[in-house]
Length: 285
Image (cartoon, rainbow, N blue to C red; front, side, top):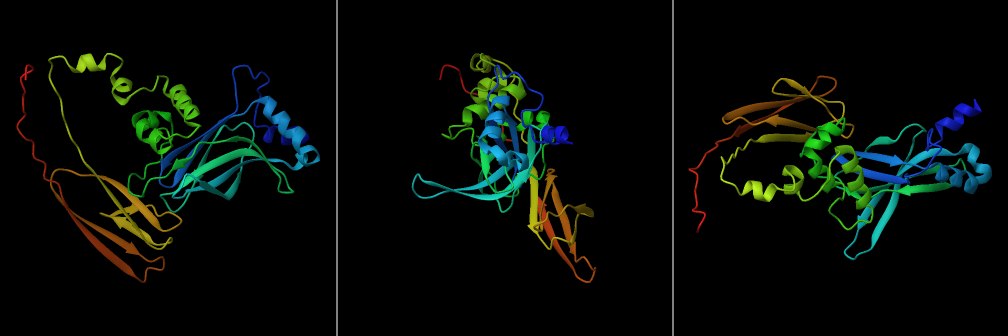
């Protein structure tokens, strides 16, 4: 039983050699209501926590502490602890649900004892969640991140002066298996500028999507165009839809949980795309 308990709180896992490894905690924004924390912990840091907590180690629980961050009119930053999330050994990432976007967050990873003592091993970067309506999709793996990494990287503080942004970029480059440079270079390679300057067929296409979002009672039933809509715990909902080049009339119906009351809102949406004649300039101009 003691061996099982020790494995469950061992954040270093089976690692015995810390060569080339350092403590790292990276926080990313996945959408307005979800954050994703990823970490690495060395064996040395676990042993340091054990020694520091002394007799309280027997009750120590691996924990993510979620901090709300507020930046005032000056350069000062205020933080307050929102909640503690128990985690366990053998896990190196965790999804964290948050409320009331847009807001800024940071997380600490460490050990929390029964007496309330919290030993911090690593602190994350600061991230800011976007306003609701950008997307309701929660990416399940890094193949999804690869498609939208620039947006996720920016929302996770990658372009700020935060001291942890180097670790954030390092994590992205490890998972994406390619360097992150300027958007043009990252997408097309180091010869992009020269390549794009050559005479060739120039492609340009534009598509559009629509975000429908709103609020209702958490236990209500909502249908959009006859399809059920997922309601979050706070009663909010978001639906991402295609926007074809035509007029659409979309009924949105909400019914109370007991079926007594029903309300309907109808959206009339029209997309009218116009493609202008191309303009060709002489290269000598």
